[in-house]
Length: 309
Image (cartoon, rainbow, N blue to C red; front, side, top):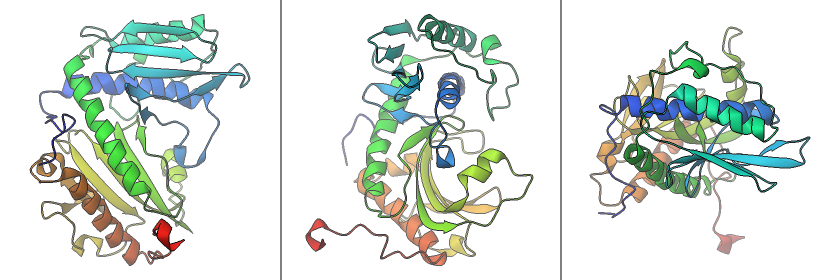
């Protein structure tokens, strides 16, 4: 079996408060990036990335674009780090007992000290929490061991997703972390427009799904899927896609809001001899199922060997 400290078990049940606390931290950081970053298609400008020491925004520009700053949840030192291109560095400790409200206030104070002006909607997104970030004291469960395990797992997934992404010649998004749902994802596009979404659809969905796509991702669990899992879906979803075979044998199709989604549970991946190759095979099988049924030009979109160029 592939030996990697990154691939340790990470149960959802029993870690709900730890996960939600970290999720809320990521949402605060994500909303800061959203506030200050110029728009890019499919919301690619609001995301976060897996870095060599934790979860990071990458450079966010301020001062009329003359300078930038980066916010990082450092999962090695367990600090919140704010670094500017002017050489300024400020940080505070991430520890059990730090409330979401205090995290928010400490971070906003740092930005204020650095003369970085930020306006954002002080409210969690899609978490059924109506309390503003600045008032959330019920979540204070940052756990160093859990956060380190989660980051190292995301780091491993990030590498596999980037290898898979490199096999495709068409438009592909960066491998990045979506803070609204706390999943890491990569998406392939056929280049063809998708049918318009209903007028009542959320603006976030309308911008995300302007074009045909096949998306792949990983999340650490929620109330619907109470364990970590990899997923893939095709949009628009072709008829009978859920009749197509998936690899490995443990993978399956499930209904997700009326459309089939391919699922490979993380715990099933752990039982395989070569998790990296098995995950690549899972993504490839889900891609082939969607791309062929949707009439994508699969051969033209495959990256050729350098020897063939």
